Length: 353
Length: 287
Ligand SMILES: Nc1ncnc2c1ncn2[C@@H]1O[C@H](COP(=O)(O)OP(=O)(O)O)[C@@H](O)[C@H]1O
Ligand SMILES: [Mg+2]
Image 1 (cartoon, helix red, strand yellow):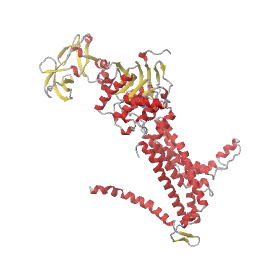
Image 2 (cartoon, rainbow over the protein chains, first blue to last red):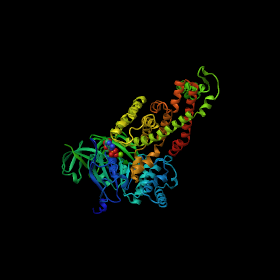
Image 3 (cartoon, rainbow over the protein chains, first blue to last red):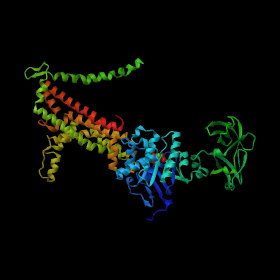
């Protein structure tokens, strides 16, 4: 077969996996470009790990095929695929030091000792762990173990790097630091990477594109900002950040909800009847009561540092609003307010029958 | 503060007491008995010396039985590890629904009395037993072979009894092992066998060593299997003790033999935990 173009570096074509009656993965198709950082994002149990394990060679697909650099992977054992893997549990070898852990893959490849040591040193330097080379994994913090796992997977110069929820065992602050570091390392090494996560913030922060999965299927593949801005369906809208639902009566160009009439953006102008619209919390504005807008009452407000999260009760249901922290608190709990937004912030979720 | 300091001692007192009465009292009795004398007409003579031990030290029959006992125990332990460790690993890697069934098959024999199982081996191994009949039917030259009343028969019978213990001990440490470890090794280029040898094996060493010690001690002190498959002449230390107590009725001598066996096993156990086990555990950071 001809060498694949760089945009078809890894191809999953109609890949499915069933365990007896349980269909873990249905018909997943995706093309990953060389050097790309792709996120597999979805709730727990949606088939992310199974997909990753099929690429790594630990599970055989029940249907479809996986091509790496234009060649089918079927029948090639995991040990011959040259794919780096970082597990959620890190899976560091407890009886080996950090340096021995990192050297393991090179030893398996019979890399001569001097070169092996040089490459281990370089890999440890990449993740800033040179000073801990002789420690055992149990003597290290979660973040350090995570970096050892990364170095161990990268030192073999894999064709593909697979990360299965690599940061989910770290506390919030460390997770943010590691995100930056992971992104940096991936850029520097340039290895094609697939990250599995259930954390939308993590996927959006790290990935060039995210594939949002639900129930064993990919429901949308897009750049994170585009998937966030134009979710393909209500599930994606909800999963990627928060979203408010607004049920409105459309009558050509304008809409009405709970007695409040508002204009529609051009793409929705032709719609008629009852339609579920979606709007992000950061696109809503809180105005004093009496101003034109959807009337409501502040139910609660939570201070989150950079911004406030305000829940407003309206005749159309509760609406979440994020308000930039400018030094003055937003309207108090119990205050009557009105909600306003720009027409172009509205998205259509689905037609309601 | 002072109440809680004594609480552990107070709470464990009943168990300690029960253990003391059930174990130490009979053992103490045996130990005392081993210093006394014996006469065929007068029975036990109340005296205190090391005459029994002195006579055993030069008794070639006893020394031969002692050597045989330990030889058999070592061979049985090695064979049980060679069978039980891979067996546990293979069952561990099976699909969940097969796993439970296979474990039951392995452990099942433990539910049948050792005596019954040993009778089974007697039926199979006899001069006219199933194995020899089969070999003769196949025209194997030299058949029938003498298998009953050999060390081979004793080892076979003991291995059959002990393998499940190794499987269970190793199974327990496999359960504590991160299943991702073997996969991590494979993703780094190790074949299945290498992944097992380099990554899985060192991490289940505590279970293997505990299983080995258990099998060794039980084999060295086993009575029913060696007595039934070894016959009257092929004696091990525990069957020798039995003979002294019940046939010769020389209880003090029997007691001295029992004490020596106990001390020998104890010495091996201590050496094993000191030298082998502690080193393996220290590497894993649990010792
Ligand atoms: N070995 C297996 N046997 C049976 N069912 C499995 C197995 N592995 C995964 N599953 C099922 O497949 C589905 C997807 O699992 P998984 O890929 O682990 O999801 P995720 O990683 O997205 O949380 C789940 O419903 C899970 O119960
Ligand atoms: Mg998972």
